[in-house]
Image (cartoon, rainbow, N blue to C red):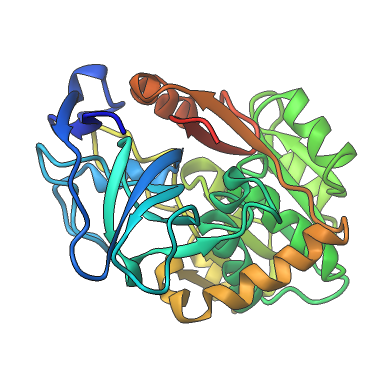
Length: 336
């Protein structure tokens, strides 16, 4: 075993886009697990837009990462020491293990991963937090019906790409909003979306009108800002707007831009509901089991964009906000 644990710690609160100076890389002794705990060699770290919010010292659904603390992240790896009778050395687990090479966690705070059924990065994407977020956000809040029109923003990302595919499985017409012709091509030709709108090159209002002739029954929003406003203007009666994220606003240095078309909710007897995945922790297994079945049957496609190197975490994280990724962005920090 290596003598030290390399960690990426938050060194300063970012203003706007995080800078490399907002992080510090340190070496600490590897901690040993106590009663009921396990020591995990972290192999993959999930990079998620929510991480940007965790860096802010403001009220949210979870406490912020403290200055000098290991950056919070969902991670997956191999158990190399265990004081939990239910978790054996050599098994793989996932959880909030952070951006570091080794993590000690309580056995009740991690979940087992079967690396023989799917590669570990899949458990950080389709069969992990993003996939579970997509599953419950769409099915419990969006409640799409066969023949309805579902529009999803950030459609080429980890959550959006799964939302669109599940909506198709439920018989909906699906329109994705993404940035760039290649992402839009992939949504239609590879993931089976009915249409895709390139927000970078198309007029969003006219494109939504053209691709949603019966208006929008479910809008699953990962982006916020102008895209949310454009969708609100196209709502059908009794539409459901699902607020999953607002990545266009996360690095703003001024007040967030709120929707100006919110009266559409009143006019169309529509609803707009926010949620976080932790609302559904007690049903996590339900989502994973069904999506694993869809994956095995070839009904669901999982896409991972894997970068390498703990030291590359700051730059890799920025790819979330520049759109320079396709699917679930994962950082590999150790071999399988």
